[in-house]
Image 1 (spheres, rainbow, N blue to C red):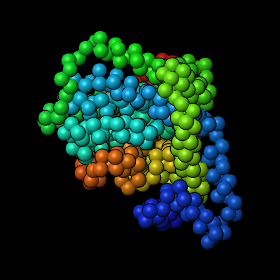
Image 2: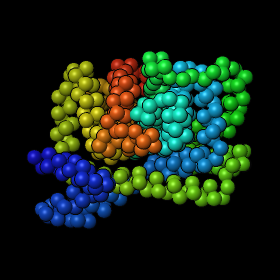
Image 3: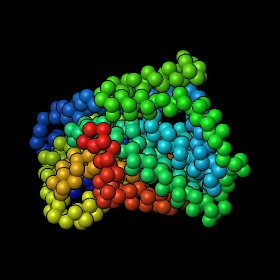
Image 4: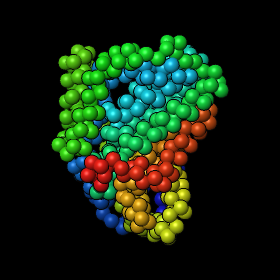
Length: 428
């Protein structure tokens, strides 16, 4: 009963407009003041414990990398490369949107950053080319979730820290699912574009043009190579790789492309601080909220209930994915990952699934919450950029969301999708 009242209180506070982080801090504090069950100092202590984990130090570096890339000439070059690859397909601008998100996913690790970077450039262009605002926003929002699946991924770093998993193993395991989601989105977009008569580039596909675009983007593409090579090759820890990629981004933008001014760098640092602070306040606020759920026995009870389905893998997967999607609609992905992620991974391991496999399902599932109301940050941001009606954007997102749900089931049904690369690299 206490757990239900707590969850109801949280949902109510969110619906009336209170920031999620503040709500997750106030509820435990109010409980302690009302019942005297623990000293009020427990709240800041649990907040500190939630963020006092070394792998989390990598997050500001990856955010800074993305901001430096966005401040330099990278965005235009990546868009040109995407146009050279898929612009000739029907629905070329929408296809560019998806491919660009896949490229940016290897640079910033943030779905919200992907939405802002790609959306501000391509959504207006799509609208001018005859796409509806709602479709433009839907493609941008869902494609941006690839930014949390293809490494680097802030969500994976948070879960690896909370569940004591290898960051490198999760990064390696996320590559194939992320690419698969992107390719399936391209296929669905082509089908929709043919039915609706959306545009495509009049310029024929050209290997020479692709080669030129690839050469111009080569400096930017070094960033994910440094990242993945460093972590997967065992040369750097996740934190060291974050620092190295930020340094590489500075060199590429400031020295190679010569497009970073001192003002650009200062602004990139400011934006990185703000975005890092917003991520860390949610992580910190999750600490006391998770503590209170544990005190009420909610987490243990939920794990026991899930364990009851362990004998039937199909039913277990259905229940687990259903829970992840349901919970993901009410809280931000970082909070859900910290509060429920370790428990879902442990329950899946008890049901016979590999921890890395289960962890990646948790990450992808909770990232879907970024595009669902009432707290879907990417959904609201893309709709705002497109000046589109929220309910119509939600309808347009359905085919793309079904793709990600289908991939969730595939990740359980085909273990090689998430485990082949980590095992080949000796990471899991």
